[in-house]
Length: 364
Image 1 (tube, rainbow, N blue to C red):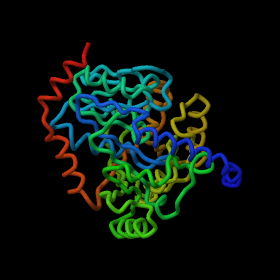
Image 2 (tube, rainbow, N blue to C red; image 1 turned 135 degrees about the vertical axis):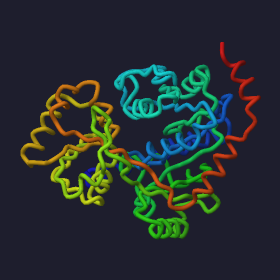
Image 3 (cartoon, rainbow, N blue to C red; image 1 turned 90 degrees about the horizontal axis):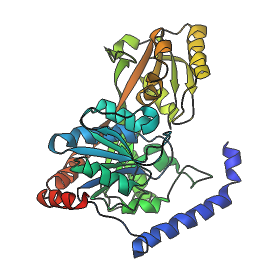
Image 4 (tube, helix red, strand yellow; image 1 turned 180 degrees about the horizontal axis):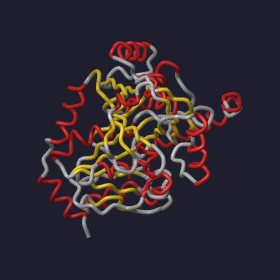
């Protein structure tokens, strides 16, 4: 695959040119950003593939939900629908996973009072969320979506990418050049094993000018949070899986990181079946997974929360007979928590009377 991508380098040059011109159009005002009537926090990245964005969004939800009617607005990548879909109205009405997409559906089920809207036109989606009562919006995967103004722009980048670098699409995975990080209000470096590694990555990033010198930066490490049975949601202690043989399967952006988390907990992954990101499972996929467990004599089958969304609605009967466990993942801040909290506090404390008044004026 890497050798094939080398031949795509000329196309990456054209891609860079297109991205640069588009960003310049926004800078000079030729392309316009729309302001909505509630505070907007964008969480995005500059690369395709898994960098731990969804667990970070969940952390923000848990930090912010106490003081706002919070909403998440997303494109709903991988969904089998188009247009505006209210995934959750915050009152218990939740759309199907196929309509919503796996990540928005995951958030809607995990946080029932959260308003979740998906729309390929994020401005329209944000206005729908406000109509439903949102007083603050998290724009998921919003860094490249510059048609919406944001009060706080957070970009997530992995430690590995800072140290090893990458190329622009299609020869690499990068959506934008590193210089785009200068637009961010906060950079979150994920996949750090510990504080020592974060400090090393931070130092190298500044020395190589991979990280802008004026932008605040925080460090994150990814941990297994809890294991649950896929159908009952009953919590199973992580210690129960120590030295147990498991078959893992996942359709995520970075399957290796998922496997590494289990290996760190001394879980014996005898086989990991990796599907494409946002893969919608078929009967033969499930049979392949079950067959792998039987052939390896594994004790459990373990998958991710995102994959569980794509399984529960269609394969309930098959899952009843198999020991399928869902691993919930979380981000932990190892450096810079005060930086993040202060930035969020600044957004939360903005005057709300004007937002309410503007919201009423925008609803027709």
